[in-house]
Image (cartoon, rainbow, N blue to C red; front, side, top):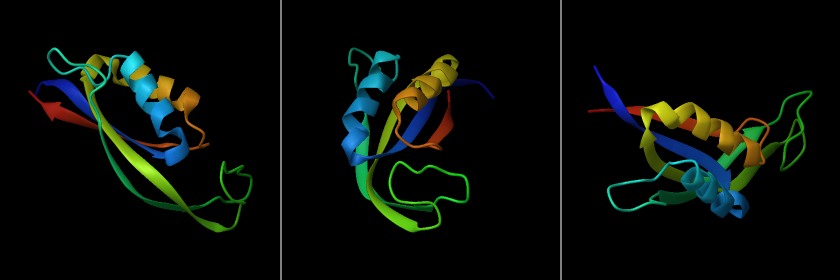
Length: 106
């Protein structure tokens, strides 16, 4: 199978969603035909508990937290996935950001 594109989904607190979208676009994600900065977002609640030794951006280790988040979805060329994910991690506030990558069939 040949994969030419991938879908990237980034889960981020609403306060950082615009920054994440900007970094995605500036790193070649979201380019569809004659359009760029293309993405789709859905809002939801993220839940987590930081274990011993963590430094959560929101909340305290050991406590179960709930955060309003956006799931930001976009596409990119398969050869750009690694650099895009690295760029997102640099601006994402979480220690362990949730980033999903789905290769898309040609």
